[in-house]
Amino acid sequence: MADATNPEGPAKSPEDEQIEALSLSGAVIDKAIEFLVGKEIDPNLIASALLGGALGLLIHHMTDEGILRVLDNAKTSVLSGELRVP
Image 1: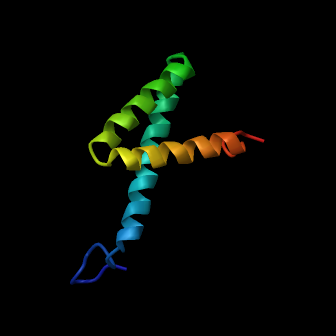
Image 2: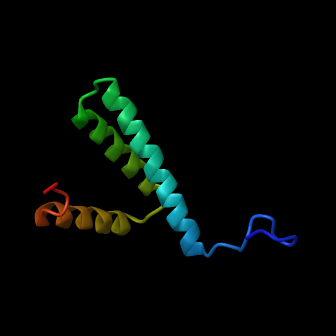
């Protein structure tokens, strides 16, 4: 609830702010994908562009080892079938 000292309500924890930012980022990406699919762009091309963009962003904010951990986690998810729709 907002009050006179903080009109935006109680302060959010850093974790809450990260969750909110991740949710917003995911929603924007989902809309971009929806738009591109609507333009009948090959889903493989869309995915390739998104992956390339993500790696380009990570290279500026993570070490090579960190990026490799992210990719290892993705590989593990693929191999386990976690990403497949039942």
